Structure formats: structure tokens, C-alpha cells
Length: 122
Length: 107
Image (cartoon, rainbow over all chains, first blue to last red; front, side, top):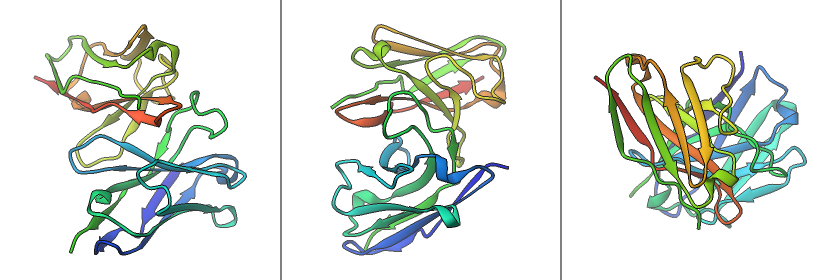
């Protein structure tokens, strides 16, 4: 079964850090570009970041310089290191298999994890 | 920045046709995707590249995209189709962008 399972969410104070993980199974993880997206409660989905198969990355302007995406193909795992967290980063964070960074207009987010909640509050 | 606009809600009777629109500047020049999200669950891809259905998605789901509007059509709508639906496209100014979502009510 193709599956993505996120972990690492929780409550953190403003200015704090958190590291999210995503474990992939059921497909050849190393040949796919992988993404993080987020969704504040009751709001629209927002793309956050992508790492391609070569390890090259892109970020949404809202998180650039604060978040770092990475992957470990040997462990079929995706990560998101989040620093300098703000209240507006509060959301459910999803990892997803998605469009190629090199051809972004063609693909879609075809596999999603169940999400992990991140709450930034004092 | 690029924006996609959806109606907040659409209501339909069981067995009827539901149409959900998504508007964006020259959206027809891009590929549009659609996602279904039931309460408390993750999104599911139901349409990609304007009008293609992933494996396992019922034939009653279809899509079109022309001009400034993409449309998701559900024929013979069932109560199980009640969910939020999000359109999505890519633009060089905003990367991957989603619409605000449409709550489909089947009653």
C-alpha cells in the first residue's frame, strides 16, 4: 500500500523550532519529488516547500529562510525543519508526493499523508 | 501574485449534476487539478491535467478548463460526495496555488 505518515507536530512557543518527519512506503521514494503543504484550520491549502530527486529545494516566500526541507532516500524519509516559528505557521502540515520541480505545471499532488498539527502559541 | 477563486458553497440534490467552478487569469493556459477533502481527512486527488481521473476515482467525476475557468462536474451526485473541493494550478509568480475551496452539500 502506498502510504505517507507524518510525525513531529505539537505545541511550540513563538520563536521556537520543530522538526517534522514523513515516512514513505509502498513506492520508490527516491525517484519522486516530495513536498510539504499546510492548511490552517478552516482555510485553504498552502504549498510550503519541495525537494527534488537531486536534493534541490524551493520554498514559499512565507517560509523562506526559516524552514528547511530535506530527504533521506536510504530511510524513505522526508523532513521539514522549522525555525523562528510564528503564530501564522499554525496549521496541519501534510507531506505529499507531487509535481516535479523541473516541470511544475504538469503534475499534481497524488499521494498525501494524514497530516500533523503544528500549533505556535505562548 | 496568482489567485484562484471558488464559490464558497454549492448545493445539489442526490442524483443531480453538481458543477464547481474555479476562476483565475488565463487559467485555461495552465493545467488544473481538483482535490476532495472530507472533514478531518487529507485531500484526495480526483482530477488532474484538467480532465483526467486517477485510478479509483468514479467515472461520475469529470473536469474541463477553458478561458479563465476550470470546472469540476459530478454527475449523479451521491451523499458520499459531500466534501470540500479545492482547485489547484501552478504559476511562476506563486508556485503551486490552491483555490479557497467549495463546500459541496448534497441534500
